[in-house]
Image (tube, rainbow, N blue to C red; front, top):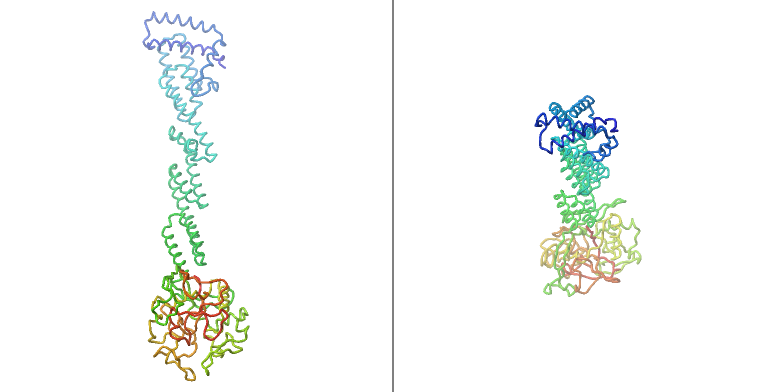
Length: 608
């Protein structure tokens, strides 16, 4: 392609030779020698031009093709032709004039002015980031005057623009890969930042920066939706550092906060549901998720306290009366009272009046969590509901007999045809009377039925629970003190009580009467300090424990003391004919698990 401009090429070569000679001699063109010297030089150059004209183009093209122009490939355009035809014709005219007269000051001045204009045009193309046009213009300037002032700076700028394109390409590639901020040396943000350091207003880099910013925010929202709030926060921090539009970050923070709050609300509901159902381990486990959310310290503290209280009392308060409804049938369980956890000394000291050896050694029992115990003894009406629902046959039903009190003889004797529906004398019992003629097994069957009907855990009390509740925080012989009651507090054997036939108790509380000879209707007397009725009198009660002659090796946590295969069970509390010593808080009796009669009933306990 160079052959079409052969005359111009020869002019350029001649001009560069002249320029180099002048530059090496450090003699400005404007300061050329005398006219004689100029004439001699002109003759010399004319001869040289003739010699160059005689040379073939093939002799010069390898030399022209050898050096690549800085900033690009010279074969993409003709490096000796200006894109403006008029300007290019003017350049050729100047170079022709200078070829004819190298010292032509007027032509030199015009040429410098033209090169200044071309250099300005090149820089304008650089402003537009039009690298090809800039490279073409600079190539013409370089070929005419490679030492032109500003040419080196312009080429450095062209190189920078070329580098910018490389960086933008790498930034786009990293963005497409999803490498927004990682790995450290090759990510979209890093390459974009390099571009903006060199060209702060670069539109493509600015657009890419915004895209990275928005993509990081999108990642934050996606992470929040997956409940990875730690990662969401990390993405938002990256977005905040990169982007200029902090409003987008603020909006994302609000959205994430709403997602986080919704998750906290859901976790709170799960914890409360677990507490409600008594699944405290699950509640504790789910609470960890709430802690991991961060930012909910007060709620965590509140739920922890609720869980702590629930572990101790369930969702109830000490002293609260609970009566669970049946799930799939009309009716409800017997009322129970919530008992607070605590510690007490079980048994009696050796010096206590009326003490038995089986009440020792005295030992400390500690309840780590609360429980509930029946407000009163199970009544005939409550037991009837059980019989009708289950068709359970008691031991007395199977045996066809039980034991009753004989008013004529003052003794307890066996009678046929007696079961749970009869009172202590063998008469039909009132519905609100404590149920009698039930064995330990009958009582166990009743509490198992309650558990099935209510979905709660009902059971017989442990012996430790019974004494703990009976004492109700006291350390005296009786829950009301060490002597006789001042008022009627229980159905006890009082010296002032008489039978229908005029009988009196031979061993009784002096100057005490409660108006009943046999069992009284449940809750006929005031409760003890913890709100339970008939703990020390009315009827004795079955508890869960096997009988042991002493408390040696007894549990210290208040649980029932059970030995596999045992047949004798513990009976607690006095009954309507007990001697006063049997109404003491520490007193205990034993009975075969198949024992039934007019003296023993039971009350229920419930886990919280």
